Each structure stands twice: as structure tokens, then as C-alpha cells.
Length: 88
Image 1 (spheres, helix red, strand yellow):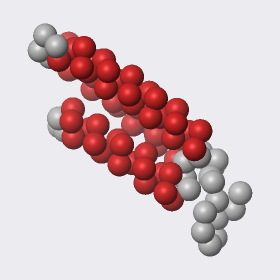
Image 2 (tube, rainbow, N blue to C red):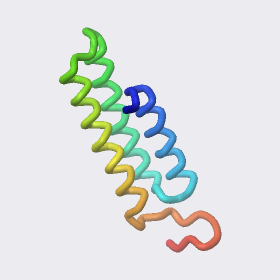
Image 3 (spheres, rainbow, N blue to C red):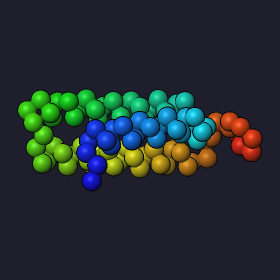
Image 4 (cartoon, rainbow, N blue to C red):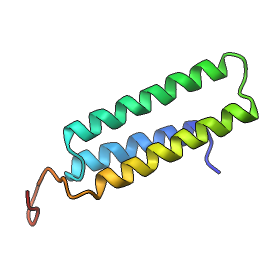
């Protein structure tokens, strides 16, 4: 199990890698980052009174969904086409 801060850092890193590799378009990355920020804001609201087990589970579910969406976006064939061997 990864704590919330680790999950946030890992997701941001994966988005950055997807952009650099051309596997994510700018639009996809912007959308993912917006969703990421929404989850981060929700986490801040939850943390104001201390995270309950239900809130932690909700955040885990949201991060799982965002991670799955990131995986899908990176592999949907909607590549930017950087570098040798990439097709548009």
C-alpha cells in the first residue's frame, strides 16, 4: 500500500513521462492533471478534520480510477509522435 503523498507523486511522474514520451497528448495530460488537482483538493478538505477510514478509502478509489484512466490514455494510440519510429 502506498500512502496518499506517494500516490500523488507517482501519478504526477507518470503523467510527465507520458508527455515526454509522446504517449500522452497535451490535451490528455491537461485533463488528467485537472482530475488530479480535483482529487488533491478533496484530500485537503478531508485532511482538515483528519482522514477517516471512509475518506481514505474514497481517495484510494479515486486515485485508482485516475491511474486506470492514465494507463488507458497512454495506450489508446493517440500518440503525439515524437522521435524515430513513431507514427502519427
